[in-house]
Image (cartoon, rainbow, N blue to C red):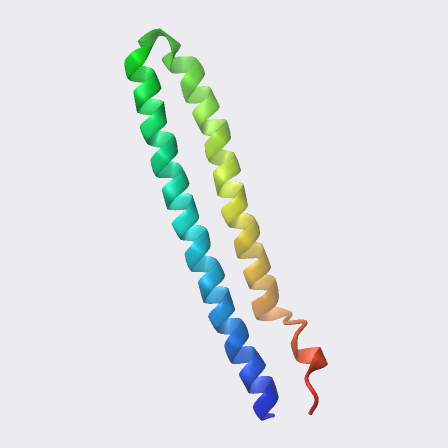
Length: 88
């Protein structure tokens, strides 16, 4: 029982790290994306609608990476394939 509890505890810590790094990476990505969008719009205001559309597409890709990480973390948290290999 002690081994299973250890694996579950380490899995919970790993899931917290996955959530944190996903949020950190998404925040950095959105910061860079927003800054570059404002720079491009300031340089060429007539291209603002085209830049806005492209910005939303890239924002969706940035969010998708975070959501995939969250899906893996939730899979490890609730299904936890690592517990099956632990001897009782």
